[in-house]
Image (cartoon, rainbow, N blue to C red):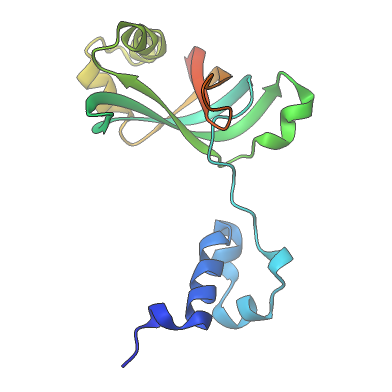
Length: 170
């Protein structure tokens, strides 16, 4: 029996399900999907740091990843509300639901300093001072308001990084 992975129709159907938004997916079945136009399907939100601006985010901290063989604390973020985009021409580059992260790499004093700037207001708001407690408290996600500054990698203009500041737990 042939595997579905080699069936082009199955592959197209599977890929189509991947781009349906949660709202559409909840009410769409295979028959209605196959009757839909490609233009009816939701676009994926961008997967990069949003433009410089002020946002509401869902934040989760994780510690189970390495970057270039170095341990890191990862701040995973999801845009929940766009409050202000500094450059109106970049407003289309951010969507609610957009996910990105900011990494704090151990052994890099600038990265650790950035982590302190990000985690201090969260710890203060939650009444926590120990980093492991802050990580544990955010593991299910917390809502924050923050300024996000986007910077472009000097060696690769396609890479965009985020730095958060003015963080307030909401």
